[in-house]
Length: 214
Image 1 (cartoon, rainbow, N blue to C red):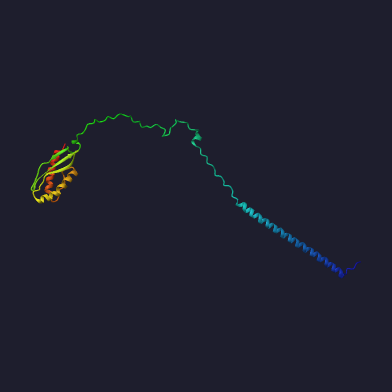
Image 2: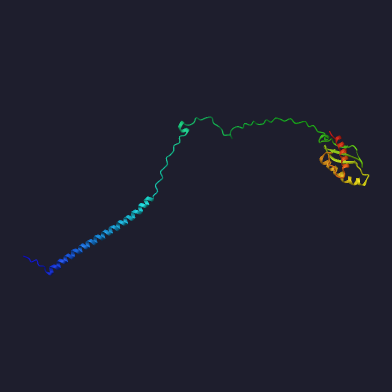
């Protein structure tokens, strides 16, 4: 019968086997831990790759949904093509509604020569007026008519016995003549300082023009 008493050699072998088993278990645990860590790292990298791809796929714009097409039924489609009517020409091709003028000869007036004496307001000629008496002396003029118009008024007589009368009439007479020719009448304005001569001039010239009326 074998003895159950342990010896130092047997204890040493027992503990050695125990340490070896413990070391193997520890090595197995470390190997499993390293393997699990590598697997976790590989999974995280794969997820990081998948996430951008999914984000990129999410950003892809989808084509717009086409709007429903409205179908408009025209009169031609509903009732068939219109019946062709008479052809209408454009306004430019229509004949003009304005009748063409007829070249009707216009009768020419007879070439009746108008006497020069009746062209204007007066008859041509020289017409002396009546003598208009004043306190300073007589005044008489004559009208010269040409082409029916007064072209000149000539003094036949005027006061000149006094030096004052000569001085006044030398200024008044040309003005009265010029105005009568300009207005073609005897209705001239009175001149201050020569009103007596101006009134006598109007009276004599009015008589001369009355004689020149047609």
